[in-house]
Every structure is written in structure tokens, then in C-alpha cells.
Length: 434
Image (cartoon, rainbow, N blue to C red):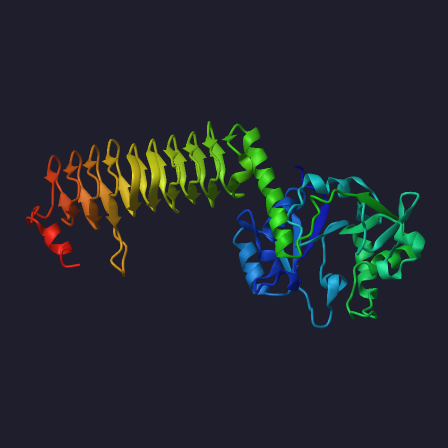
């Protein structure tokens, strides 16, 4: 989308006490990314002048956003002396003539949903909802497509209470409006806060044009509680799944599948029910079977599951990962690991078969070690590979073996088993004592 001559200010200074959490409100995650991330990402599609106003846990909020984005301006609100949405605007200096003010708790906003603010020419554009039941909201009184005033429910008369139009909380101002009226805001109210909504009354009194913009509740939904967070997550997940299905991914029972914002699919992919795919995972021409988890991993021309777990930094190509197989920080190329195995900190080459119950023992309680497995290796069931260990090409490892040797050379059979002992009539002697 074309960048416009508009500055965007995101108010992200609040504590969010209704979230019942020690974490800053705007850092609560939706589909794997903080709420504020989603708002900045949408904003960057239409503006190159973005300012985020912070206060509560300001260091954590700024550091987190800077890990995702460059060229974002941060302004610290003096919340002790200038609390409230109006106070948050005190030290903001946008560079463009039109200024869009967003809230940091609206993670479902998209660039398309903000288009209306770009298309209207007015001193102030005020977003509104039209609700069947506006109880609890301040009413916006509109006449001849111009906002006349805003009245809180407790102050509304009978006629005003019948108004179903409410304030959605997003505004576009001309730069001149901000420069003139923000310094005039007063905290002479019950909460002793500076309110951005007071600009509306002052501007109206001075005869400025205030135009309402009807927006949909889905995109401008605020998150004020864990319940709101869960509801927003459902909406975001539906968007993500729809995007990838439209791109050609087959999803079975899609409502049961969780996919984070950063996941990428390419080619012909199938995701069965109950799967969870997270982080920077990339899935190419692959099949993820029911109830599998893929975290920060790459699958190319492969399948996994059902009930497989690819933990972070797994990279599998032309590989079959079966049920109850777990991989972690491992590269597998052309491998079969059918069931009940753990492959961690390993490199496994093509043609290798990993039998059921095989474990790479990669951790000694202090350090992690690598297991290197070559081509065409056959590993029998219930094998423990105690790292660091190297298995060269064309090796067989007998079932039930524990391999601790540094290197198993090509062509060898490795076998380590305790000799079978038979104690005659032990069963009868043992239970006769009971």
C-alpha cells in the first residue's frame, strides 16, 4: 500500500489494570506477537512517521518493539503530572499535516481498515460505532454528518440515551488542531485527567469541521481483559487461517488449528486438525498430521505426526517423522523416524532409518553434545546414542544397544547387550513367598 502524508501516534502508556497482570498491557500477545506489534505493522503500511507514547514499563515496551521495528519514535508520557489520553499527546510532534491517533490495545486494526481516515478531508475525523445496545458508552450526537458533541451516559438526557452511536476512540486531526488545543486541555474533572475527547468540544465551539467515520467493531475492538484477549485471538486466528487457505493450504477442521503470525507456507501443504505451528516456522510442500506441534522449525517435502513435536531449530527435508517422535535443534535429510523417538542436537543424513525408542542422549546435566549420523544407517529399536558420538555411513546398530563410542566406522555392526540369563523356576519361588 502506498505511504501517505500522514503521521500516526499510538497511545501505549496505560497500565491496563483490568488485564490482572504484571505484564504491560500492550505486550500481551495475539498469535505470537505483542498487541502493539500488530498495530505498528499495520501503521507502517500507510505511514513512515510513527510515534509510540509509552509510560508504564516503558523500557520493556520500547525494547520489545525495537527488536521488531526500525525507525519508530518513542515519547515518554509524564503520567504523574499529565495523566490521560490528552496528557499522552503533550510532547508529541508529528511531522505531517494529518495526524492519526490510535490506541495500543487494538491489535485487530489493519491498513485497509484505516483507509477511511485517509480519504476524508476535515479538521477532525472521529471514528464511531453504531451499537444495538450502547449501554455503558458515551453517545456521539451527529447532525448533517457532523459531530455536534459527545455526552457520557450518566450525563445524557432521555433523547440522548436513545442514540446508538458511540465513540470508537480513534481520531484523525489536522496538525494545527493538535498544536492549538492540546496545550489548552484541563484536568478539571472527577478523574483529574487530561482527555483527548475534550478537543472535540473546544474545536466544535470554534466552528471546526468534525466528521464522523463509521468503522466496524471487529477491526477496532479494544482489549481490556483476558477475555477480550481470547476473543481477539480467535478473530486473528481466523484471519491467518483464511489467508493461508486462500493461498492453497489444505486445513482439516481449521478452527482447531493454531498458526502464529510469523509462520510461512509454500507450495502444496496439508495441516490436519489440532495442530499448533509457531514462531518462524516455514512449511514447504509438507504434511503436518493431527495434533502435532511445530515450533520455529523448517519442513521441506516432509511429513510429521500424528502427535509429533518439532521443537525449535529442527530442519527436516524429504523426511518422515512419525507419531510420538520429538526433534530439537536437529537437521534431518532423507530420514525415516517412524515412532517413539527423541532426536536432539543431531545431524542425520539420507537413507537412515531410526527405530522406535531411539534416543540421542545429548545432555549430561551441564552441557549439550551433538550426534552425527551418516547415510544409510540402520538404527535398531530401543537404542541410546550417548553424545558426543559419530555414526559413519552404512552402519547397523542392533536393537537395545547403548552406543558410547566416539565414532562407529562405516560398514560396522554396533551391538551392546547384556547376555541373557535364565533362572529356572524363579517365578514360582518368588511368588510362593507372598
